[in-house]
Image (cartoon, rainbow, N blue to C red; front, side, top):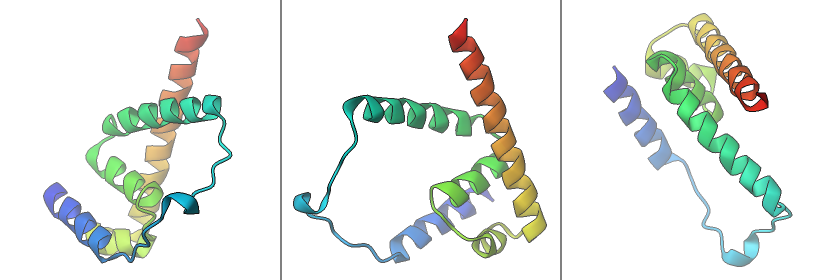
Length: 108
């Protein structure tokens, strides 16, 4: 099932229209400190997602990184919309708990 999900995600990525950006198209107002903080948070989030159960990780990634709709989740994972909502809720709660533990560990 995991392999089928990953292949489906690959197919969706290939079918999405994309626009090539040139160097001059990008405008950034991000300060170096903000970039470092964002990179650290990104690294933590990627590591934390790997700790989630497979279905929670898949739904979380599809929702937040791939920005797929719930209907797309349902058809790809063959689960009900209610199951998608419940799984996404559980994933967010697990990540929030991990973030709280991470912050407690840093404050000591």
